[in-house]
Each structure stands twice: as C-alpha cells, then as structure tokens.
Image (cartoon, rainbow, N blue to C red; front, top):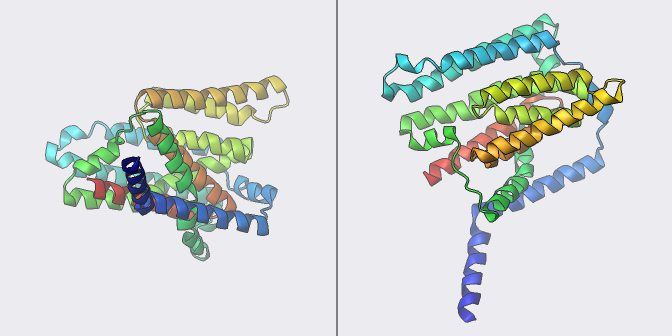
Length: 323
C-alpha cells in the first residue's frame, strides 16, 4: 500500500511539474479572461458578421486564387528531379516560399481590383497591429482542448505518429531546422491566414453564416495539410454547393447542404483516423476554429496570424526539445 501511495505521489508531482500541466492552467486562465471580457463587452454578432461579409471576394476571384495555388502546389511535386537528394529539403522550402509569395501577391492584387485595401479588406493596417498582442492569449485559450483531445486519444490507445512535416523537421540538420522554423513561424501563418481566413472565410460567412463557415473552412484548412487530393476535389465541390444553397428557400435544398456538410466532416474524420493522422486533423481543426473566432471578433487578420505563429513556434520548440 505504501508503495502504491509513493508511486501515486511521485506521478502527481511529475504531472504538476510538467509543461503540459502549466500550459493547461495557463489555458484555463486565458479562457476565463476572454470569457469575462466577452461577458463585460458582449459582441454585436450581426455587425461583426456583416463586417467580414462585406470583405468577401467574388466566386470566380476565389476560384482563380485557389486554382492558382493548387496548380503551383501540384507543379512543385515534380521539381524534386532537378535537385540532388541532399538539396531536396532546402529546395522544397524555397519553392514553398515562392508559392506563398506568388499567391499572396495575387490575393492582394485581386482585393485591390475590388477596391479593397490591406486595411479595409483584411484589417491589416498599421493601427491594427495592436491585435497581435492578443495572439498569445488566444493561443493559450485553445491549449486545454488540445491537451484533452490528445489525452483522450492516448486513453483509447490511438497511435499518434508525427505529421510528415514534423518528421522532416526532426530528421533535418541544424541549418535546415532554422529554415523550417522561419517558414513555420513567419511565412506559413501569413500566407495560410491570408488565404483561409482572409479570402475563403468571409465568402463562406456571407453565404452560410459564421458557425457553418467556421466548420467548413476549418475542415478545408486541416485537410490541406495532408495529401488527399481526390478527396479535396470532392470537398471543393461540396463547399460550392453548400455556399450556394445553404440559405435556399426550398427546405429540401437546405437539408441537402447540411447533410453534405455532415458527410464531409464525418468522412474527413474517418480518412484521417484510418491514415493515422486523426490527432493532427483535430489539432488543426481546433487551431483553425480559434483563428476564425479571433478574426471574427477583432476584425484584423493580425490576431489570427499571430495566434497561428505562436502555435507553430510552440510546436517547433517541442519538436526541438523532443528531437
């Protein structure tokens, strides 16, 4: 009995001293602070939703931007033959940065053609930079949910291998790790938030409302980090149908869109679970939901970019320590 008590006490001490426990407590405190602020300053939901809806680009604009990104992404898959094996890791980072830059420039040019500036179209003016200060608080608020999901998956015995990008980082040399960190903390958050939260999210909000838009864009965001290209094409078709008929007058069409959304979410969970990526899928869904809410609440992409950057920075640090 004494041995059991001693081992339980040691386990409890290890838990209380662990970084996960401190992050969990910090996350609960951050969530409490945000909840108190929300109660004290309740948002005008309609006004916040309309603010983002007014920033929505047209369907063909979004289609062209997504097609440009996918075309460049697929084309980049065939560039490995032009480099030596030891050059491939660095070359992939350089090509990814080039793709991010080209698509980001295309997004800004499209917004300007629609008479939208960086500030009016994305809330990224100089005066909005102060919302970056909220990023750590937003990030901490999702930590408890991330840890609970991880603990639940471990409890049911689900194996959680590293995502491909994370595995490449662990196996890379110090120079490559620095380049990986720059891409993950600076370039990727800026580009991905510009595309998903800045372009796709407002368009979905305009046609579907915030709740359904968050679910759909988060699922799309999570899936794009894996290589399910055939499913991505089907997903895109479902997204278009949902956006067009979500608020249709015919109740049968509305039922169809909600059924399709449910199928997409369930099937996305199934294919990632079967492929061993379910934990990453859920983590990315949670991150995307948090960044969507941050952008919706503040009206500035700086808040979601900062939150995304903190998430990636903590992940990079954890991999560096573990690796």
